[in-house]
Length: 486
Image (cartoon, rainbow, N blue to C red; front, side, top):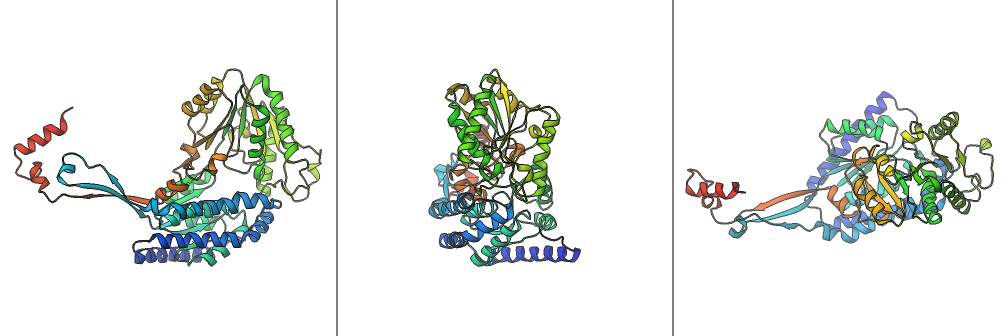
């Protein structure tokens, strides 16, 4: 962890961040129109540095988590960062084209024309989290740079080794007036969120987002908030349980469930509970025959989150709720030294007032509620804050339609979990307490652009013809009557 900053160091950092922001804005203004070639060059440099630093990222993330698989880092941080940059590079010329819009009668007949041009916002701030620190920094940069902006980044202090590698990458890939990065603790984050950016993207916890939004509001900085919440999984009586639990447990064990889109709890038919548990046990045993000395099973990121998750389990046990670790090799987790591993753990039929049913879990714990009538699942989802994602497993078209149309979530998957985030042309974002705004693909380009409305007037004296030019006359009355009739 980074050492606490002194008051003087904090003041110096704040001054330096403001100076970099001023320099970026001045450079952006001096550049004028940002060409497609310039945008592509900036994206290319991002791709190059991601590929060059693969091994360092693997080492740093394994160090920060104490155990994180090479394959997980390559799939979820490296490849998942390269892909959006390549996608933006391929499509940005098309995205940059202006859009013609219809002009209202009668101005369209007189030669008036309406269009939208997409213009960069200027300088975009990015506050990225610790769970996928590279992807959730470089992924957004795809849309930010494709839209022609400059960027300033504040990565998480919970993954300090990775933050230092990213700082090295940013300094190598871009001039500081293009992209800059500031590492450090919460004090740096507080100062960063108060800077007068042209837009601010925050990915993290809802509780922190409230402070970020308040700080941004002081400068009227628009925000995109990528948060989380309790994403439900509804399993139908028509579901293939083996297939469903294989996919669900993959989503719950990847990165040890430290994913904003991870399945947060299951809702299963009451008569299927034991079959669901058996299918989950089999899925975990197939993926992870051993856990403690298995380098492919990720640790909890730090002691604070490890104790938080253990606290959820302790509260459940104290309340008489059964806790079921899925531990195929029957390893003794009480003797683990520094790895902070928690086995995938099922918690069948928990009380709704337990913390693991009230707070986003963000770990490998999976509560299971039961239902008799399918409508109970819809009612339960709607009685709680709107989640980042909702997942349905089954073959019943009416149930699928009910989940998609009668509940509100940031996104949804049918017969899988999380995979919608891999579709670059699907906007990624939450709704209500799970987020605000969206990005990815074309949606990201638009989020980080200003859609400027442009109207070009005809050569004719439109104001006189329409009776808008004083003194008002019969033409004025005719125009008014035409406009106000039903």
